[in-house]
Image 1 (tube, rainbow, N blue to C red):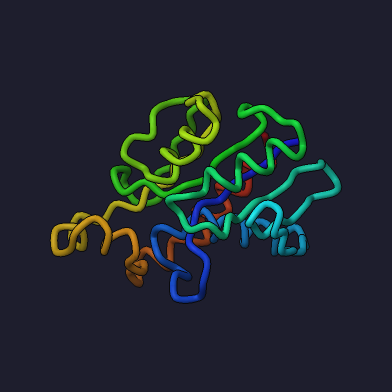
Image 2 (cartoon, helix red, strand yellow):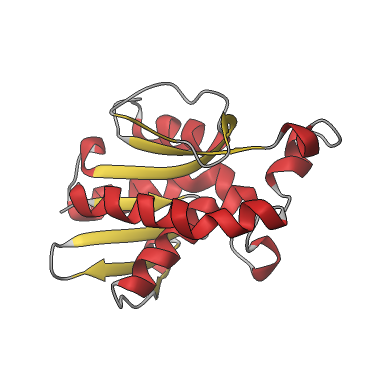
Amino acid sequence: MKVIVGFGNPGSKYNFTRHNLGFLALDFYAKTHKLTWQNKPKFNAIVAKNDENGTLFIKAQTYYNEVGQSVRAVLDFYKLSPQDILVICDDFNLEFGKIRFRERGSAGGNNGLKSIIAHLGTEDFPRLRIGTANDDIRSKVGDTDFVLSRFSEQEYAELPTILREIESFIDKK
């Protein structure tokens, strides 16, 4: 079994914010593959399963900075290892739309990755970082306001292409 974890914050007020790019990617995948989301309180997450390949998709409802709680619960329940997950998260240090895959690595300042590392006790898990950088906006607001900001019109127009690239990556894994 493979577990795909998309980072984001629960609640409609966070829709289409930079920090919810992981949720957005999973929602796009679920829609194109006709998957249904179900609330799973034991994981503190919303979950969808692709029965064709046994992949479980997780949108933690703990808020971004505590996603490790849900990941730990899922791995414990299914008796999986950290290498069985793929994390999809935003990265404001990467050029907008750039996709970077790593088999392991540090949190690099990402609080969601810090949470997973703390709950799993390892940095050895795959992650797909999606660039959300916009120096124009980021120079005018702090990091917290930036990650909670919505995409510009131009960025929004580019999202379908980025989401299709992420979908293709997931299908290959």
